Length: 298
Ligand code: G1P
Image (cartoon, rainbow, N blue to C red; front, side, top):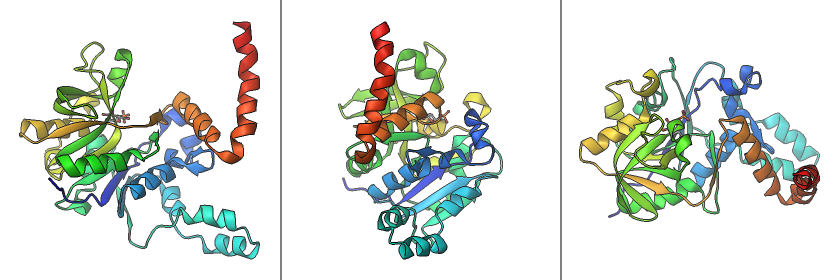
């Protein structure tokens, strides 16, 4: 079965990022930097690798820095060119977006992730689309969304990235109720957003990459509230199953970092720092020096 190509992605970036205050008092959390690139750049690069051509940001008040980040910077470019700083110019190229490829929609009220995605419905039309949560940064040889787009071309339906989590962490996620375990994928018979401890239907959690059918937007249209009194994306995807449509969990190959938490952000900083040729030796030796005496003492 060959499916319609996925060319649009929604990036919900309206959250306040209160967990990172005071940093996020004046910068959007998506501009916070892993090594030398803001979180949003990792999300955009992953989307591009998956063939996405249209990028829809669902923003809120105070997110102007995101728009500036993807704008052209002719004065800066001219300056770097004059000084022959080719490397830095090249780094800047990654932030260039084709004219009209990026759209911004405001979520006027913080009514939940499902509502944020719904806010983009007029720009989606009648085709499958991706959703990327930039807080979830995934290091992978083949970018996660690309893996999913390839799998989705065979299956159709809705697909969510899935990862095994320890039982005590399940209540922080959307969790899958598994119908059939197909190995790289599972077919899903239900989904629960933030289940109570010990009530999770499995240990397979939803991670912030989705390929969705437009009927999910119609379901979100009903504005039903769920966990935490918010309009949940998980519930709208679960409603697809009730309607008899397919939903799959995709066990991606890669390592996910929860950059919505401080510990996860620090871990990602270490991992992405060590992955850089120009930093690895110095950084690794620093880490070794500060950690080794502690280990020895234990
Ligand atoms: C959101 C989704 C949740 C998913 C998680 C992945 O939750 O609602 O289903 O498991 O992202 O990061 P949030 O982290 O915004 O509370």
